[in-house]
Figure 1: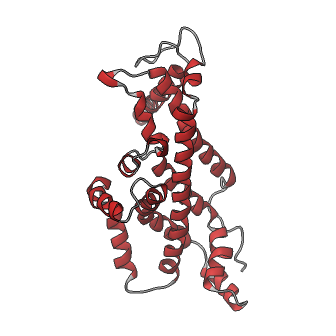
Figure 2 (figure 1 turned 90 degrees about the horizontal axis):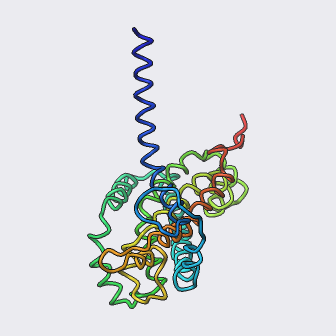
Figure 3 (figure 1 turned 90 degrees about the vertical axis):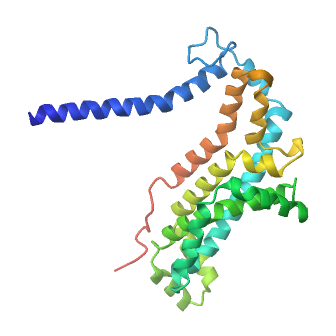
Length: 276
């Protein structure tokens, strides 16, 4: 009876996993197949004839290249600013004990819970007053500010895993706290920095609402906003071109993930830095 019950439970678990896998695979299969289908629609089907015309139609400066470049500038610049600021903010929280640490972390945690739509109206009014509306640098600053709270939490947790004894040895040799952060802590928590970088970049890359509100010029719109152009009036959608653009749009994120996974696939280890 026990073996039979175990077999049924295993069968039920396998069936549940197959359903979850299908929920992820079917949309991906639709994107790939529709990008190669000259008569694509909402159905997941094998194309009657394979064509690359959908890619030829979207691979133009106005449709793909300029929006992708704008996305790389916005998300890349904001990610660098987020990671640098998070490292500087997490270092004192991880290395120095103060009665203000927990209230500060609680405030940071609260900031991660604020819906972006609740703060866009005052942010828009502020950006108009300081002449940052419709500027790439203003959007970069807001992107970084919106991702910074959670980035600080992640960075601090990874930084706590680096032994402080390594820094104390560097301080004995005359290194400053900033030098020990740059030369010791951050290199040892490389996978943690990579996690914060990938998470921040991915969250910004797929953000539609922020650039849609803060950028007004069509030539500055990132790909996350320009993809809306494939949805025409009265429900008309060019599904094949939309699928082709989606594949191209997803490529930078996939490449970033692959590069980080290959570079830090070994996990978070200190490599025997502490000797007994």
